[in-house]
Length: 205
Image 1 (cartoon, rainbow, N blue to C red):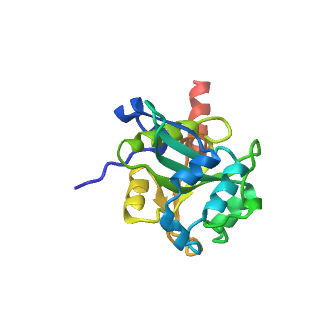
Image 2: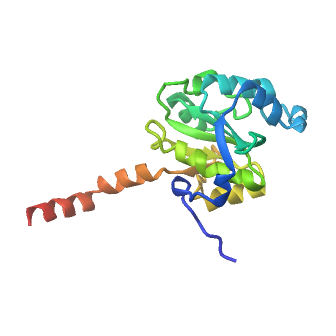
Image 3: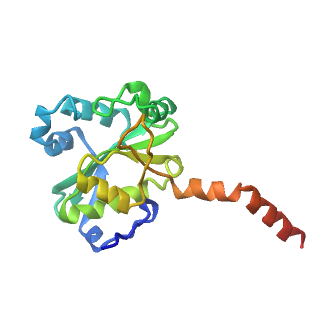
């Protein structure tokens, strides 16, 4: 069966969005959504104190998905907004995903060079929150920041591929996927020599 590839930047609003919304995570949300089993895998996954540190570094890093009717927490979408140093470290295989260095995180209001998809838990109707996050990432300051992630499970990787992420195939970053933003692809096409010549020719006609 052939998989249908979508674009993360243009994810359609599903019916579930009438039942869910997203909000910037609070310290209380971190406690509520942090899976207890993660505490036994601190060498591979971020511990709760690290999650809180990342949340405080940039309030757009972690979003909580809630039911509209009663604000019940249904899931979360966690990212790390990367500084230029963070993007460089990521692409060179020196980014500590389970415990990011503060220098690698773009603070609130600072330029964001790239966005690392840190962790997503959106079962059932909570999946309706993913396009809401995608819409937030279309805002100025974010829409040209390429997205990266590893997809820690087979299902996670399958979802990333279905949303337009492709493997980087770089030995320095095994398992890393990249999503090149539509805004960046449009800019590349507009600056291509062949297109520039064609445009100039058309304007002279």
